[in-house]
Image 1 (cartoon, rainbow, N blue to C red):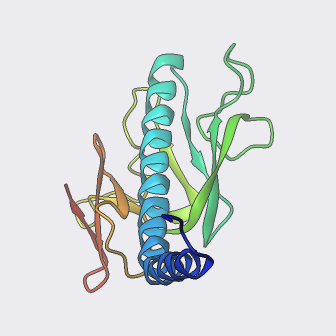
Image 2 (tube, rainbow, N blue to C red):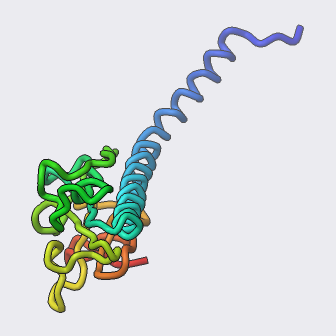
Image 3 (cartoon, rainbow, N blue to C red):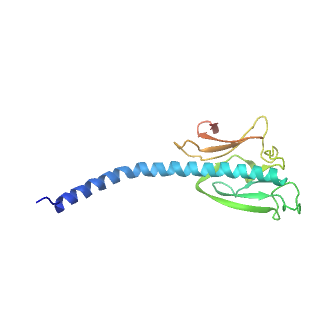
Length: 175
């Protein structure tokens, strides 16, 4: 009589349960790394969209956020597309908010004034973003220990690149 006994089924279930318990910590770490990389890629795409919107609509556009930790960003453009209320910045209540994106993990930033601004030519605004020879890049980054391939986005005058955040030197190692 070739049947499976209740005891054999219970042993198999116990083995599967033990293996699942052993796998849970690594799955949690994998999920955290995935969430960090997803957030960084979302920021990278949002910055590029802000830059291209500024260039294509010939008006100042950028990302704005409420402070640290950064849990969401909004794409905001100066005035309205028809030229109404355009004054060269994205600080007014009359400026147009195109969308808001929420993040899976909170980020940090070294941008002044909680915004990243692009000119109507699609370049990062050096004055608004605090870019200079001494500070050629500004960053949005995940500020904790991470094994993620990407944990920061760097914005310079003409480039937006992803990289890995170096906690010891507080800089983005571009990839």
